[in-house]
Image 1 (cartoon, one colour):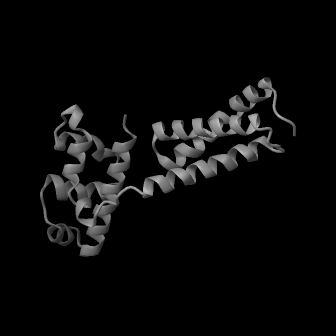
Image 2 (cartoon, rainbow, N blue to C red; image 1 turned 90 degrees about the vertical axis):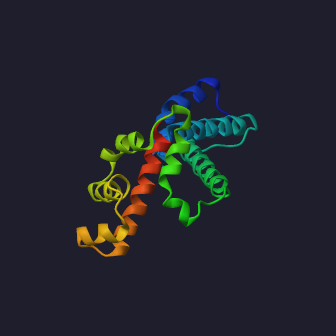
Length: 168
């Protein structure tokens, strides 16, 4: 296919903007990053058109660019320092740091996001952070083993981090 006309480019943009944004937002759970990466796809697309690169299937071409942009984002993201295992359990420090500008109290923030957790995670986080129970006390009270409590707590913290990251 020869280079696209301006009208074909605008039509392609309108047609594929939402599907590309959905692709990124479903994988990242972060509206701002999804918007940025969608924009990057169209920037690369226009650059390729200006270079007169042949494009047989616009949809496949755009989603091919989107996959490459997504993988580049992941590579960049995972080059950042990894949080140590001990930091995972220091969730209060994470929440306070994330909301320092808003001057929110840790418990207020926790209670704001708690209803959005799955029931099992919500129960364990409530017992651990609000009721201040130890992991062994929680395991005993719920009739579960320690690994279950630790794993569920870790998943809850992971879910809370995602929720906080997605909140503007």
